[in-house]
Image (tube, rainbow, N blue to C red; front, top):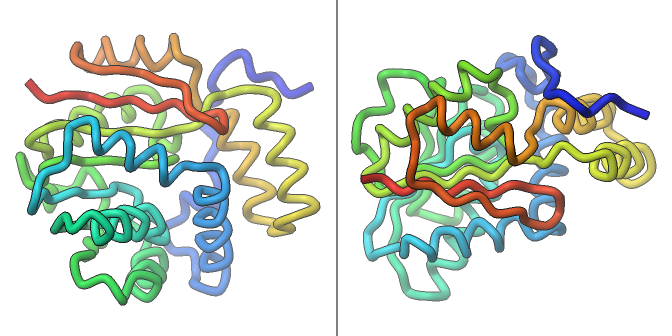
Length: 233
């Protein structure tokens, strides 16, 4: 059995290399987008946005946007509801941004910034809502705190974070999926490692307290994800 009692640190995933070439990264981004759709990640994210609620012309930014699948899902939902939104994806990997631009080219309200999330390119109150999906586990504790503080500073109204629940069933399910259903070497390595780097509820509460954040709500979502909604004062 894998040791999942403590969050693992000091071990990088292959995807943490921003210089990965497109031929290696593109299949992974496609696979992650499919998993997010299959397991309800997009629907949960949209429901979280509705809790603010979203307003006409709101500017929403997805940090660590990867292949842009979450932004596309939001854009489709916004079109159906005749809700004009401005959507901006942020990612440090050039190949990821290029893939996302191609994947969402049909949506004129989606744009991208290729930059690191702690960059001064991301400014105070630049967006209405800042979100990240399955991204924050890439940061060790002190860096996670800095990331969330930066997300909150760059938002006018609040932050949505979804990330993995560190659980043995998720760990072994991903090992099975990436062996038999999506046999990709990078995903087979990074998927289970992502679970080891992810969170228990108590850990999230401790990190949020250390970040000085008091107005938040944590909810467990299928499949083995935490949703953290932070409301800006």
